Image 1: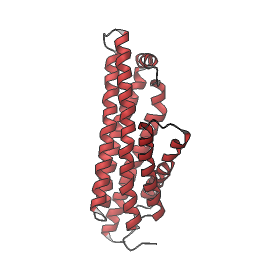
Image 2: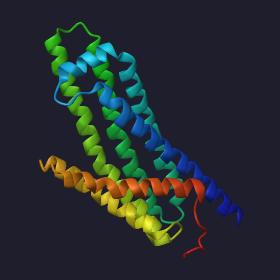
Image 3: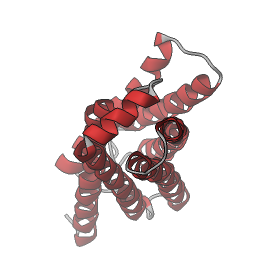
Image 4: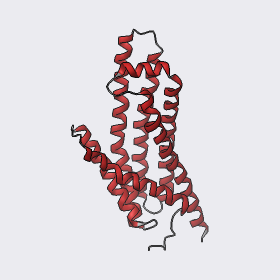
Length: 227
């Protein structure tokens, strides 16, 4: 194994660590802690949860910040990993991943604002109104961010399928998953809500964990390994 390939495999494993961090903290923040505080369609109950469980909402906010950091670092390291293979696609991947991080950062700003509102001297009706506004900002930041998350998966998959430095079907799965995320965003804002839309992001989930596992276990193939 050449020294350049050893260095590339090291970068691949670091990339895998950042991507794993993004996945783990994303699950903890959005699926575990988020429902403990935020009640969709009930800003009064959400306000009460923030007041009574400030430590939980602050933990949720800290997790959101870690998600932002992990997304940015994953985007940077993917660029570092792929730039010599396909610089244009590597730049696209890094840019869309960073834009997704910015969208999530807007969500974090809204969460911090909710904490401030809950501890303010505003009358309850005004607090509830502002909580509703910030909750909508959080929901829409994540929804719009899904568009850019889909966009970041497509060049990632493109690099894999064309370079064959990783399993080619991993690349196809990522591309399908990327388009699935984009379609789910457009369906959401078109007012189309059905059980079908929930399945659109399944290929992305499969592709992401496959990518994480491959990066951590195998790293990346040498440029002569095309089977």
